[in-house]
Length: 237
Ligand code: DC
Image 1 (cartoon, rainbow, N blue to C red):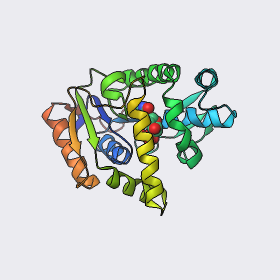
Image 2 (cartoon, rainbow, N blue to C red; image 1 turned 135 degrees about the horizontal axis):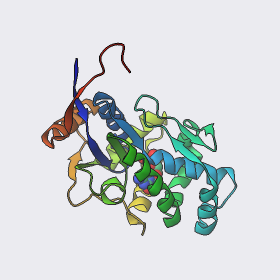
Image 3 (cartoon, rainbow, N blue to C red; image 1 turned 135 degrees about the vertical axis):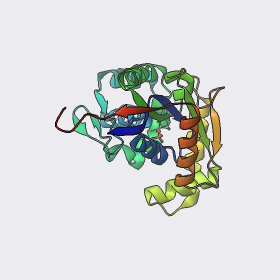
Image 4 (cartoon, protein in one colour; image 1 turned 120 degrees about the horizontal axis):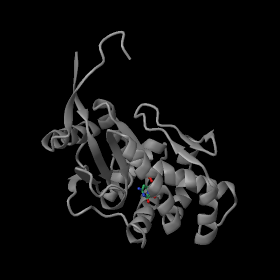
């Protein structure tokens, strides 16, 4: 029996928050029998560690000293990508409002990025096929990725998506938070959010997740990143 169309190589999926990256990255990885890496979850776990230790997120030296001591692990199963901090599952906690409010300054600290990028490259290096989402995957983490996609959407649309995802009703508050994080992520000195020169830019404002997913499948096929993998015969490992 043959399993057709498994992903080989790295798909780098970058863009600001609220563009629908996580949903489509997980679905694409699951569809293609690939691993999935949410690099934002790693920065969120670092931010949680900073909060937990009572460190000032605006103090880069204290932040990097704290993050160096943390043990952050992320699963790469697109169906169950748990995140642990010092051995404890923090998958839900890293999505909380306090973490969201400090993750941008924490992720702007160059030493934090150096540590986490090294870990991300290690994970990517062991996977035959992987979909990686973040802000700097195409530019810094995996500059040789054979497919780089940069998702965009209007701030209003992104705020709307975030608000319904997080169950928040005050759209203005969410929009201000989204714009504030965009500004910090795009203007920081270390690996600012920007599309790689060879990234395909995809505006998702008018698209739902299924349409974005279809566009990604098409790009993966066009780039020749699908291989036919013979599955093991029954009864054999
Ligand atoms: O994708 P997210 O909202 O969970 O990301 C959380 C924060 O982490 C976001 O403010 C930007 C930062 N981030 C980053 O700087 N680099 C990445 N590769 C991924 C996320």
